Amino acid sequence: MPPDTEDSPKNIPAGALRVLVLGGTGFIGRHAVAALHASGAQVAIGSRHPERHKSAYPFASLHLVRFEHLLQPDAWASLLKDVDVVVNCVGILRQRPNESYDHVHHRAPAALALACAGANIRFVHTSALGLHEGAKSRFLSSKLLGERAIAASGSDYAIVRPSLLDGEGGFGARWLRGLSRSPVHFIPRGARGGIAAMAATDLGKAFAVLAALPSLAGHREVELGGIRRYGYAEYLRELRADYTGTRALQIPTPNWAARLGAHVCDVLHFSPFSYGHWILLQRDNVPSPNRLPELLGREPLAIRPAIQPKTQPEPHQVHAGKIGPHDLPDTPAG
Image (cartoon, rainbow, N blue to C red; front, side):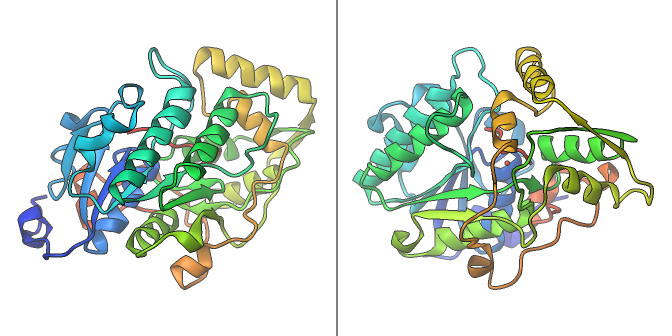
């Protein structure tokens, strides 16, 4: 599909908000880019593989961004030219060679926040609910260290903490919906935390609203979620109801089995379930307060209708904002 005339960068109105979306080709980032573009912003995208996405984003400039190389404020200078706001949607579920939790979730965002402070650029950072001191997970502890470094940077920042996300292209969302179809659900006894599941499209729109604010002083910590609180077992039942009227057999399982399964998934890089997510399942992941209705000016979308694989948009549909509705916090770097 060729881009509409007004989508080309040369036709963006003078004075349009200039936003750099880091991880803009990942799950969360795609929804942020679609909402920002629909709002009239001039969007630039940072990605690990910008060459793969040129045809999908004809309206945006794409830049190579490798967080493991951007650990000092000066390293960000060239990327921040002609930028009013940075929206960081980068995160990794598991570590890769030369790409650690500490680099991606802590040191690079800390350097970026300092660079934004020096250049008077607003900074919107994606984190997660449920972070806490003493969590025995490098995934979680690195995110908490990143938050603290950003708060100490002197930048005009907002830390966005979404609850579990449901939406097109989400690794965790796809797995949970697939799991809900199974006739048997194994429910860890310790999975007692609450979930305020929300549509990823609403998260994208919240980013667009925050980016347009002249100052983020009143939005330093922004917790977001849907209007309904679920337990884990209840959420699987809700998802299953989209596909069938039959009920799955839900079997309580011991916590040691869930913990062992999480470690196995981490070692094998299998499924979105990780040890960090096992910790999160044992705690509430519900925003307090929930600022999503305030940002949207309406009630959050329900998690239905069901995601059908055949309806997932082609990449070129993103430029028209046609993406359909942290999932266990799931923020691929793109």
